[in-house]
Image 1 (cartoon, rainbow, N blue to C red):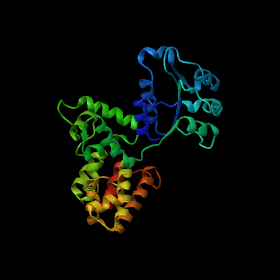
Image 2: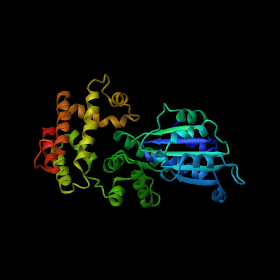
Image 3: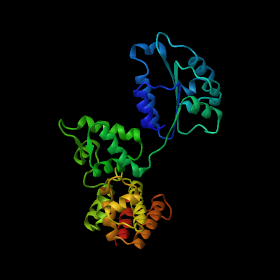
Image 4: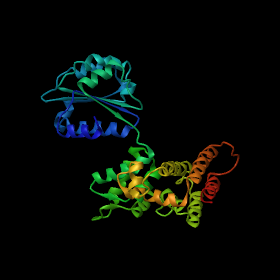
Length: 334
């Protein structure tokens, strides 16, 4: 089941007797667990019918004993096992998962990995409950996540602002949503859009000197702007780590390489080739096709790999990240 399907079922009170939320992205695991905690029982019934355990502090026998007990003056009891990846001999839960009690909702919150799907426990949970694997979102999909998440709050965000947040905060969804929460509090009354100015004021990312603007300047071959941003990055290395810039550039030029073989090189054609929902997202690629040929694109990808190694100390004795960036940008734009 997808995250959205599970959320919909919980809201409709279509509960399963056992849930396994697992994977490398803790955000969705915690969101689903919190949703069940807030929905299954009214507040007045939680003292007697809601139990939260931690994998390191309990054992399988205790979990099964709790799960097999009946609720007190309530339709359900909720048993949540957080950090279930630390539960010793977790496979022994198969005995309960094969025949779960339907007045108990057992939630296994399993982070930083997955339960082996070939094991009998996984098969039993899949048959009688719900398994959801929470996967890390790739960096290039984070702006779309930000846009979608902000829309769920009844607001909007432009492409540049979403990219600014993505470049600065990475793909840690918990960190992202916490920072977005600050923006939601700070947004002026009556304003319906998260802007670059709001981000600059409240999170500290420059609206003029960031990876989004750097990439745009590179695409347009605006050497003056490229050098301006490089100088700013060199003076503010903490907020503008070189490795993040390299990832942004590598993702763009890797996608650009695909565009050279697209039959239709219009915004619509490139968007279809790259799997973008909105043709507007392909505008920069169409512009880059005019300014960089395929051979130059391949050279840039090779340069990015070389400078990624250099910023990690390979064949680099003393050059700072700022110096490496300036050197790299000169080679890209000339």
